[in-house]
Image (cartoon, rainbow, N blue to C red):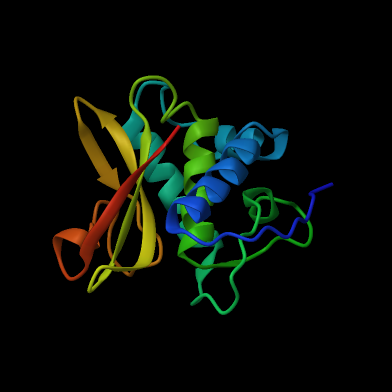
Length: 168
């Protein structure tokens, strides 16, 4: 069973810390580990690019973006269930789902951590998406909310970089 918990957060860092906790817990769960193994089965363990592409393709094909209408985070395990599977996500949920699948696949473990990029306008945070570590200080933007290919980083185009949060 997946626990439902109401938690009050006030700062951006508190929100990201809570989302990180949910993400790490989900990454260790059997449903996420099985889904990650299934969608990355054609990749070798050290081929981070293949793993990132496989995770991105799975998420883009099975979950639709919707603007956030309530302040809530959904556990990534809800997106990989066989029955009653969630099929819509906002940027927080996409970030957590992609990151938990990457972690369950071995990406972001050890020295090279996943980074969550927070962007917005006029110093106000409005969006978050994961950057997958590819090695040698190279990162791949994985923003599944956009109609853009893997690697498209809105902070390089039309949004202001607010902060990078390291998922520990």
